Image 1 (spheres, one colour):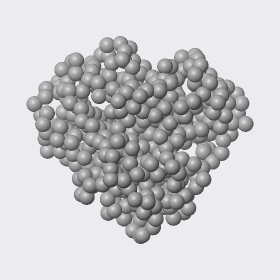
Image 2 (cartoon, rainbow, N blue to C red):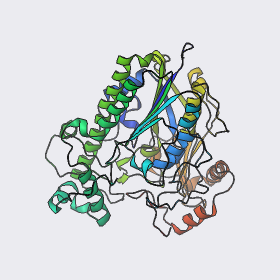
Image 3 (cartoon, helix red, strand yellow):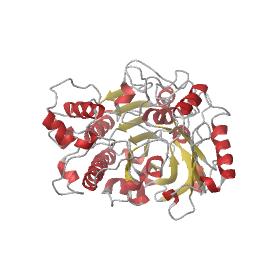
Image 4 (cartoon, helix red, strand yellow):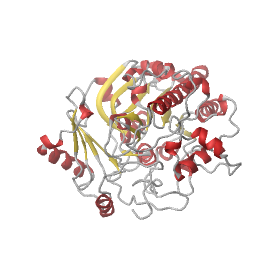
Length: 476
């Protein structure tokens, strides 16, 4: 791939990017999303059609990507650290005894950089910047305490947050979001443009590096979907009430509010696409596309009214959240328009990066290199994937999509051979399949689940999903 030259690597991770918003994978149920730059990138790339997270949500996913080590089933994962809420299981720093990609590559001569606005990575208890020669945290996403004032008026709250969603936590959320963005006047001041422009600048300033590894983390298109109006008007050019966040409830939005939500999400994706194009053009101008592997993926997607739900959760797990895009563009566009349907997960991305860099991990990792198999048309080494989210694993095979609690209860089973697999669960018709797939979930957990996670499942009788902060209560 590199013709004997040192190979550079750029890893771009968007947060909450739905796979079906990229035309190579179709379109969401509400209509096509405009992503010309990512579409063009996909045409020049190896496209993995069955890529999944290893653990969810935000921080467990990044632990898996950054280390190549499994996070599920969250042993020692009951984090209650100062400077953060009590997050989902595994919502903590990277364990000290697990080397990160950046640490490993820097030790072998790579110059490493991280450009990110994912504020969870930079809270006082976190350490996701380990190993980077330069790391840049762009402030202000969500409730990052980037600013303390001036406070929003009630009229401003009413404009941005529909009355139906005005709970005390939601009001506090939207107030901090808007305080952080008070001075955003130009498109370049918004989050995705800032992240991708800084990444382009890093590439310009580090042209002297023998080889480099750059990680680009864009929290967009994660909610709140605060975008310049011209992007939203591409999808909804009429004056309707504003709606920029999820309610995390099965109580559906009105048709008008849902339409606005979908337009705002689509708008955020399109803005990300435009500035991703800026980054790729910078690489083209610098000549680095000829000697760089560029990888694009996400941690998870997001439900935008699918089956009446807005948000993301571990039960019931659904493809709009769990299916993830994974594109790999090789130097000079080699292997363009290649597609593979082998199973891969986030830990495999780390393994693939190390293999392409010709670097052996200092200790064994769980990820499996997959590029050679994918390019050769092989099925790879995995016949299924197990994905952890709290106390509710998901197992996906060629035929089945299985979701349950670690107690083996609350089982949902979807037959992927049916025309509309997720229209209804077929669990009651296939008890033997439930048993078989639960055995896989337990085996992939190392044969047992942590006692605290089992206790959590027992207390959460309704197998709840993600809240607005992906958080548990202090007592859970």
